[in-house]
Image (cartoon, rainbow, N blue to C red; front, side, top):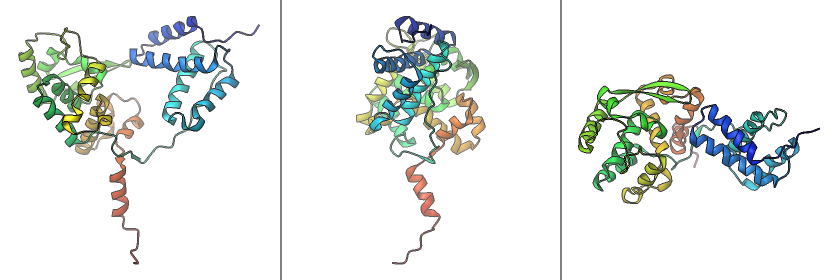
Length: 286
């Protein structure tokens, strides 16, 4: 008798447990569960089969409903779910994306904008967010890794970060150490995470995101550019301009695949256009 492959509450919990067992982060687990719910809504209580999987992919692509990267993310979650449930014959291909030669203008923070944000934070009395932005901006750590910046590591100048089953060592620049030591004294901290809420809990993504967004208008920066991951991106760009060693940069960022690091290194459309103009391949005949 053929198995009834409906997406039930029990099966969703089974999937959640598997994600936990595989040490996926809380954010990743919630993302996968939301993506699975999207498929469940599409199925309207009907059992899942290969034909419906293909129809779901077509639905996601219909009329530019979602960006290609988002569609691939949804399909990856579905494939993972099917594999977890032992339904290996159910699988849908993701959409192949040709690597872009340049990145979209106006999407990422510039060095000047980064400094304006920090100065605005200091001017408005939000020393904590100024310290957080400089910590991420000068080390390249992920926002989820900020918890590893504790009192001990500020004084030792380094910390070991465990993320996605890997351990890597991060060095703190001397100027950052000096700033953080002063901040620690002001906050009268003796141990534990440096960056905490008023209630003493470690700052999380939502706290930091909200505080960064609040600075945009006063700093004169587009809100869409201001979020924690763009600080990590800016670190990568600035580090590569100085060192030109993409392998070392990949190690610092904690990337297993150097192709991920290459994405950070794409020039902007404006920079790309300047290169094309500098080639002087157009003959001015008028």
